[in-house]
Each structure stands twice: as structure tokens, then as C-alpha cells.
Image (tube, rainbow, N blue to C red; front, top):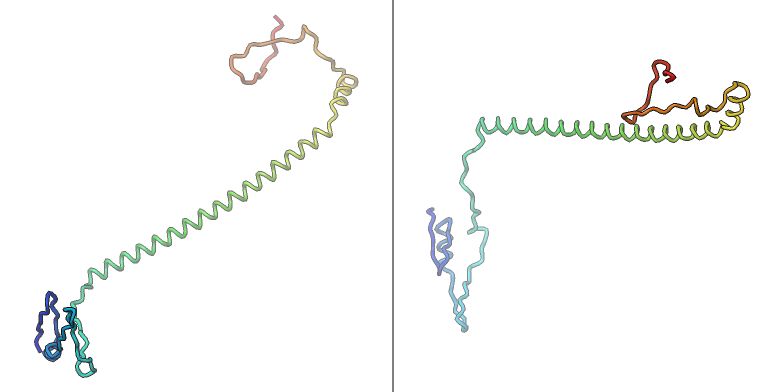
Length: 165
């Protein structure tokens, strides 16, 4: 059975067998009064219907293609595992940072509470009375006060006694 084509108007139809071509030729053409053409085809039956099958294709998967596909799959798997591990490490570090920040806030609030407790416990008037009465300290007089010029705004350490000039 050879493959044949029949033309109708501008369209070309392909037929798989001589039987289908003959059936297409038996179709009756009936013209309508409005100059329309209607094609009437006979009903298809199981006897004259044959499914169209594609010719077998050559396999395009040779050994090189399979090897490259295998290597790409392995690399993709390793990349996915690396991403998951990195993501897990990132999440773990974020949790550690949050835990340490909460510990820092807790320690800061505890430090502020203890500092206010200490400042409330110390009575500055009582400290002054003990220093003057029990320890014999007194306020410095004008001739005991010395002023120094400091080049930078830091602090001064005294390693030896200061001359009385």
C-alpha cells in the first residue's frame, strides 16, 4: 500500500492506504444555494479505520550521553545536599545569635537592677560622715588644688609624686 495524496482546493490531505483514498474519492459533493460547498464523508467503521503509527526512531541515548547525564545528576545531588547543609548551618547560627542576644538583654537588665540596688543602698551623707568623723578626712583647701593642661582628652596616671613648684 503506497502513500498517496489527493488535493482539494488549497489544502492537501495525506492518506495512509489506497482504501482510504478510494473512500475519500467516493465522497459526494453537494452544492448549496448560497454557493457553499459541503463535503459528506461516509461514516468510519472499525474495518476501514487504521491508526497512524510513527516509524521507529533510532535511539539517541548512547553511552556518552548516559554518562554525561549521570554525572550531571550526581553533581546536582551534591549541590542540593551542600545547599541543605549550608541552610541548616545558617539557621543554627541564627538561633545561636538569638539565644545570645536574649542572654545579653537578660544580663543587662540584671546589671541595671543590681546597680540601682547598690545606689539605693549607699547613703552618700553617711559616707561623708564616716570619712570626716572616723577617718579624719577633710575637704581640700585652695592651695592643695593643682590644675594641669592635658594635650589629649584622656586620663592621667601618676607614676611618681608631683613637684610642689
